[in-house]
Amino acid sequence: MTEFPQPDITETSRPFWDGLKAGTLLFQQCGQGHRWLPARDHCPHCLSGDVRFVPAAGGARLVSWVLYRSAHHPAFESRVPYNVAIVELDEGPRMISNILCDESALRADMPLRLRIEAQDDYSVARFEPAGREKLS
Ligand SMILES: [Zn+2]
Image 1 (spheres, protein in one colour):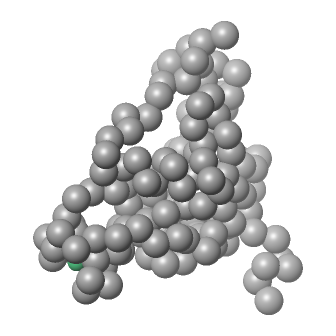
Image 2: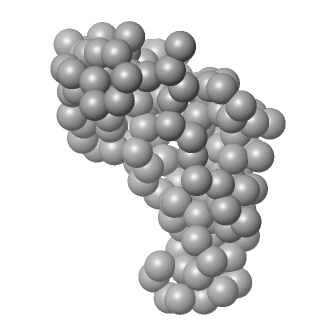
């Protein structure tokens, strides 16, 4: 079986990956309250080096997506068709992810909830449609 491409885990991004493995999605925030992903050493808005990791609550919305109908890496052959989506966390940061549902169910702005899944030696943050019970 072909392995999936591995994430490039650096000292800067290690807390993000360790957090996922422990079941928590972490984004970064500076002292001014700016929030972002992926992890970096300085705030992308004000360049402050005063950054910390903050746990996301798990709510998000779908911003946009594309559908892959062919695999561009052998490891993904069993997944096609699959989506690659831009997701905006309720806290503000945006990230690239997958939505775990049939492509016909994808709608812009649809509410999502986090689902962390183990993959090889690390874990990844994916999302699924938030049920109606989550909207009230
Ligand atoms: Zn900032």
